[in-house]
Image (cartoon, rainbow, N blue to C red; front, side):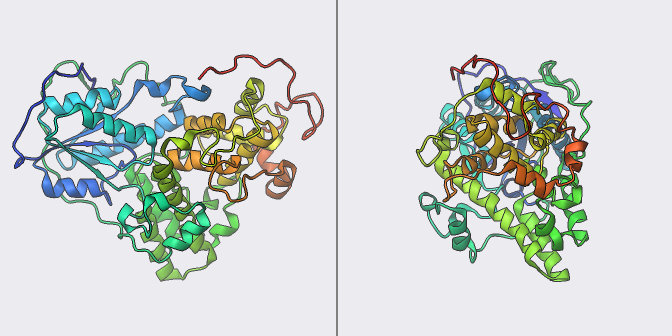
Length: 472
């Protein structure tokens, strides 16, 4: 795997013959070879290929909502996934080039100086990612072909039984509309890739993979049970469906801890090391061998939720990040610096929330039930702007997916796709239901940093003046 730091953009752009397709594949959340429509198209139509992943230095700086785009747990999983993909590409005589720069600044240069004639990119549900794709096209010569393919969703857009503008306003309506719709089966790994585009620069811009910039956060000391990469994702897929766990999924999916209590596919799905179609293919094979029940069918139900939020992101674009969401109704919340920090640092008055946030901070992972509990706490108990919680999840979660994360936070805040107008969880009831003996709380030291003022669930939240109101 080589690393390319981007120089300044050139003034001129080369033109090449259309008969010799020199392709550049700009990777994103599609870090796999199997069931990847882009690699399949490249194998059929390109004569040379350059494969690029861009790591933006801005990802590691505090941005809006007092959070980074990419935290250490996410970075570790990403680097593992990139390294695994590079090793897999080596078997095809290819390699992955890492560029430490903004894609919209460096890719036009690479396209021009290497006579690229076709650029590939996965059709992304994130507004910022789609804006960067458009910006790159605007900077390049008009004869360069830009191809966007679906790699993250079950359906291609033409396979949906409605136009994107007519996306149903709730998941239940979406599910009813797509239940009889067809999507393509997962495809096998390609058997061939074209040779590499010969790099025009052989100077110090090309480094070994291990010598990445000093400003890139170190992750080797992190201990996490998840390991990135396509092979690891396929291993988890095979392991889960080789057991009978799918037959009890719905019963145990709300547990706060336990590897076997959910599929654990989400980190590999979010990074594109697995595809949703691969999961459905394995699920249906399992059901053909062992029979279907409500629990196994619920796995596909959850994948449809994922699907809905992806198309939700495509439809609503920047509204995904708006305080008033897609509803236009502003929540009765505000910015409380102290409360937000207590939530992040696991020092709220709520032991269960503290335990869950400690788990998130130490592992980069939290159960689905846990996410709903801590999000409800930030919005309803602490009365904080939901976007600060969404941004912190964006930083911390190894399975962060832009549409799923921000869509779910909108849902809980009452400004998204929830027809009930928001969800508030009774924290005491949640603790009694999901951790009645306090085992999870004790394991993650949820009571260690409880405030000394008042009792749990009845405590004064603020004891200093609000300061540092955000200006962005």
